[in-house]
Image (cartoon, rainbow, N blue to C red; front, side, top):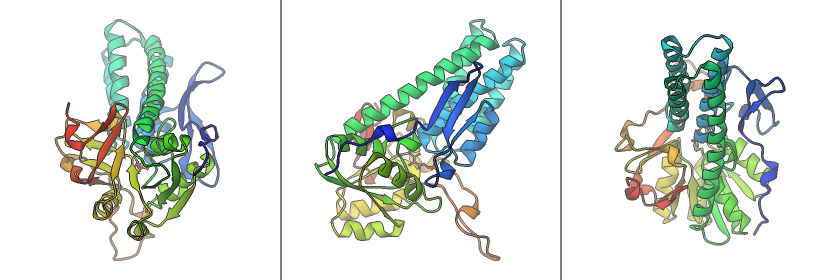
Length: 351
Ligand code: MRU
């Protein structure tokens, strides 16, 4: 039924480090290059981090939350090098930079959440009379705390979620909600890793995840590297697999969960949820608390990113292309939501 997963074979996806000269730098896996090669990029330029998020070099809700927080810390470092005080113009520039970072991608609430945490921390320091140097140092520490908290949350999600799966489970997932989508360990795949550690996973079925192929390129890469049995299928094959009785549970991640449990995740997730309901298969959403947006009563107001048509197809004269990156699965199709605090029916989210 498979051995314990080799988590030591997986890289940390995003990590703020101190270079030999003491400068803060963000090291991240350039996910555009996977599965062909594992390449780490390194930058101290916050604008480059924004570019990495937009281009999907760094992607996945918790990972972009951590990268966004790191971008604000790098902004603070750049500003500290320029000298001056943390006065009005500093705070105005901070708010402008934060809006730019948070606006890199609209759907995953984790990005605005990570940036908002750093902005508040910087404002608190400034209000306490700290200067730009001290603020840069405080933000570095705050990012390190956020990184550690992300991994801890994912491990807790994994433990709670694993308890929901039968022994020898065959799990279908869509997109990549794995270690690569977080600082480390993953949410939906965190559940798989925790279950596999108890010998409880027979196989993961990974939807290819058109158009960008996060399932084919990333989920398959990380599961194979961790030693978890994985089978790749095209998105339009999930129904046949379920009809053959080969799926015990669907586990997916989330980019934003509204207060009623409506869940935005990679486009195609909604279809998988409909299929699961039709076949009587439990449909689980695994996500940290930072993905829950209680300010939205339901999913109708979750902003859905529309991306470059070139991701879908070569331009064809006279043909329009629609490329929404996410869809919203209605709460009625969600069996349970798994967070670091436990597992909940969608109706139990508001507490
Ligand atoms: O466009 P992406 O690759 O950033 O989309 C990612 C997803 O939809 C993930 O399933 C989601 O962010 C959860 S990641 C733990």
